[in-house]
Length: 285
Image 1 (spheres, rainbow, N blue to C red):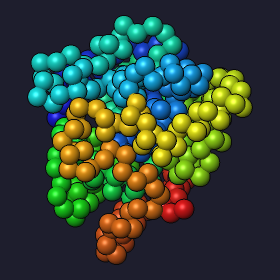
Image 2 (tube, rainbow, N blue to C red):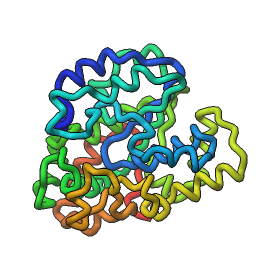
Image 3 (spheres, rainbow, N blue to C red):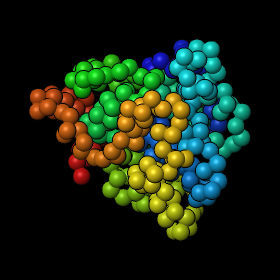
């Protein structure tokens, strides 16, 4: 697990009190978490741009397993953000990237709404590799080949992409689970926002949907200091080195990193791990 996550956070989160009217955004890292977080915060605010901009995007939706100071050096002494979430009024919107075994036990019995965003593993891996050199809370990988090896061996922070994604894929037909892919969002952002609203039971007008769509494109979020994580102090050093949290937002960037041999080996691993699941991804658009 990442360095900003003391073991006591994991213990406390297993016992986290879930409410039936909660909405959880869950992802594997670098799979569209921040993108969907922006969309959901706008949906919950009924498209009120002025209201959501009172807080930075990263502070609008509690990241349960993060420390309240977002400082890795303070994490052992700091309280977790889940302690803030405990006191929030309902209905709550929260996010987590906890692997399935570490999720709150009450998720199974209370059946809160879960929006799960999955991204094809090749692009997720490349994005995660670059993010490791943006976030001070993650191990630094100077060579793509080193990260690739650890990704395939499930040795990166938060573990296995396959374990995480397939767990929620198998739950996709449960009425409280909405499974969507990053690639679907790239292809038809407005249509995906409509589907999320339908799942949440939010009846928003076409004009409001248009506003949410307009403010949730990659370019719009990149230009908006209240939506771009680069403006947060924790990423200050990365910005100085011209590294960005919102890097490309593309489908198919993996082709600029995977060698032919790496791609062949990963394709074989992917076929083996997903055999019989029925899951499919777009690897280019």
